[in-house]
Amino acid sequence: MARQKWKELLIRTLRLYTLLVTLITVLMIVLGNLLDRNRVFGYDAFFSPLIYALIGTVATVITRSEKELSVRSLIVRKTVSLLLIEGAIILIALNADTIPTEKSQAVVSLALGVFAVFILTHIILYLIDKKEAEKLNADLSRYQEKQMNGSPIHE
Amino acid sequence: MKLETRKIPESEPEMVEIRYHWVTEEIQEIISFVKSRQGQLSAVREGKRYEVPVVDLFYAESVDDRLFLYTAADSYEIRMKLYELEDLLQNKSFFRVSKSMIVNLMKISSVRPALNGRFSAVLKNGEEIIISRKYVPALKQILKGGES
Image 1 (cartoon, each protein chain N blue to C red):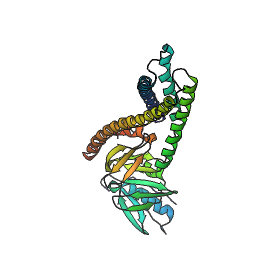
Image 2 (spheres, each protein chain N blue to C red; image 1 turned 90 degrees about the horizontal axis):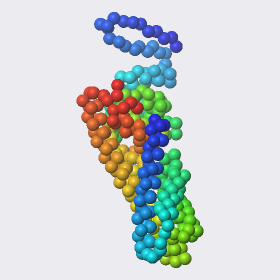
Image 3 (cartoon, rainbow over the protein chains, first blue to last red; image 1 turned 135 degrees about the vertical axis):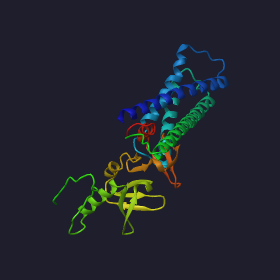
Image 4 (tube, chains in turn red, orange; image 1 turned 90 degrees about the vertical axis):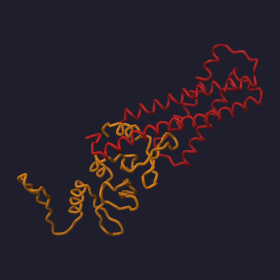
């Protein structure tokens, strides 16, 4: 069971990372086109979504709890996680050339963009869980039917 | 306490006889165990003792070192530890959903996502219980036909 638990955690973490890379890339395309259309980058710029997604994933994993939290504690924890991500990404952006942080509009847009990615990530993860729940429900119906018909699945 | 077992011919019905002076805690535990093996659990509600059929159980929850059984509309207290009950109900469609709760899989009407990777189970009486993330992989395995 412990192996299964770690496997599940690894899958969830990789799923989160991949999702963040995609959403951050989209965010950079949108913000770049709106705020700094003429800037030219080297190939190093391709690392940016990977690094930002890594920050987001690490911040989520370290603020994750083994305990079952109440809805209130969960909201507090998620807020801390969001603030950590916002702080880290803005700090990196201020020291990097890829984002025109000399424009206050760019910093505000970046902060709002990070928030949008955070919310979108949670919505997408919820939809994935919903799909998983549908599968669980189908398996549950099959299980209950088998038990009712007197042919237990595990003997 | 003296223990006596006797092999009997197959024509005679098997039985357990308990001879006692007083119904002590120990005697009550033995009675409860035998009844649970027969598909009933001996539990207390408002000072009265009831025999609760296992098939009627929705879930069992441990609260402050006390164990409670829940049916569609009633709750009972049983003198047992959660892990002991879990052992007794093995292969009877009961599944551990959190540190303090086991649920009857036959009484779940649906599962839906809760926050933070958890799932919640809606029971056939409308109650909703949380399935901890930790137990979700095992649940998937059981529902697919694997061992718990």
